Length: 241
Length: 241
Image 1 (cartoon, helix red, strand yellow):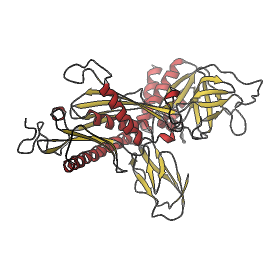
Image 2 (cartoon, helix red, strand yellow; image 1 turned 120 degrees about the vertical axis):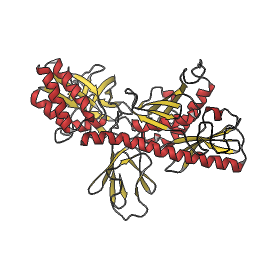
Image 3 (cartoon, rainbow over the protein chains, first blue to last red; image 1 turned 90 degrees about the vertical axis):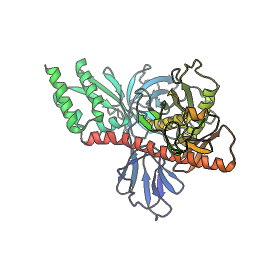
Image 4 (cartoon, rainbow over the protein chains, first blue to last red; image 1 turned 120 degrees about the horizontal axis):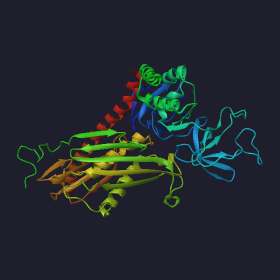
C-alpha cells in the first residue's frame, strides 16, 4: 500500500505497540511514499496499529508489526503446509490455518492436465505456495513455482506434522539457519518442511529421531540461540546413552 | 446501610475513585487461538477466542463482506455464593449480545470476509462488574489471537450511593439499589462503545458518574497495554538472551 507521506522514523520503532497506537501522523508530512506491512493500516490522516507486537522499520520506507500468533494471515508467495479438506469440481479445498479455506486447482501441479492430474484423499498433507490473496475471495494455492516446476512442492508422505505459532515457523525459516536446526542437523539425519502458517513436518528413518526433532523444535520458541544449542546437546546425550 | 463512611472509605476500604486490584494474563488456554484471564478484585473471568476461521453456518452471515462475530457468555455454577443451576438464562443471552456489539465496534471485520470469530467467556468468580470484566478479558484474548482491531475496547462501571459517585462497584454496592452505569470506550479513538444504566439519575449526577467511569476505563486501558507489552517482550527477551 503506497501513501504519500514523509518517512521520518517514528519514536515507536522497535518498541512494543498495541491496537490503536498511532505510528505516523500524515497531516504534517511532505510528499514521499511509505510501504505498510502487516499489522498497520491507514486511518484518514494517521497510520495506526491493528495488531499487538513489535514495530519494525526497514530503510528506506517499510513499516510493519512483527508478532507471533496461532492463526495465519495468507500473503502471496508464502510457502504453507495445507491439509486437503474436500475436492469439488476442479479444485481441492485446503485448510491452511487461515480465515478461509484455500483453493488448489487440480491443474496447479507439474505436468498436470485435464486427463491426468494427481488425486489426493481428504487429510493429505501438501506443501504449497500461496498465489493470490484477494479480499473477499478464498486464497489460491499452487504446487509449482513461477517456472512451472514442482520445486519441492506437493504431497508430504509419512513423517509427523505438528502445529506451532507463526513466529516460530518464521524463526525456523529465517536465514542464517536457526541454531536449533543447525545443531540437530550436525548429529541427526532427518527431513523437514516448514510452512509460514505455523505447521511443521518432520520425517526420519527412525521414529525416535522424529520425536526428538519435533520436541526440540517445539521447545525452541522461547529459547535464545545458546539455550537452543544446550537443549539439543542434552537431548542427544540422552539418546546416545 | 452506610456504604461510604465519613472518612470517605467504602465497605472494602477503597476510596470513591479507587478501583479494585487488576490481575490479567494472556495465553492461558493452549488450544484456543487467543485467551486471557482477567481479574478485578474478586471477579474473575476467562476468555477464549477462536478464529478468524471458515464460517460454519452460512445462514448466520448477514453481510457477505464482513466477518461474523459470535459471543457466548456463561457463569460457572460455582461462581456465586449460592450454586447456580441454569447455565443459559435471559441475562446471559442479553450479556452475550451486549459484549458482541461492543467487540464488533473495535474489530476490523471488513478485513476478514466470509469468516467467523468466536468469543467464549466464562465467569469463574462473580463479585460485581462481570460485564466490564468480560469485555476487558475479551479484548485481551482478541489481541492475543492477533485479530485486527481499531483500538482496545475497555469497560468499567461506576455507581451512585449515599450521594457519592463510586468507581468499580462490587456485588454488595451493586445490589444496594443505586444507579449503576457501565461504560465501554475505545480510548485512543476517544469513542464510547457501550453505555448502560439500570436506574434513573439526574443529568448533572449522571455526567459526574460517567466521567468517573471513563477515567476508570482509561486506567484499565493502561493496564491492558502493560499486559500486552509484557507478553510481547517475554519472547523478545528470551530470544535475545
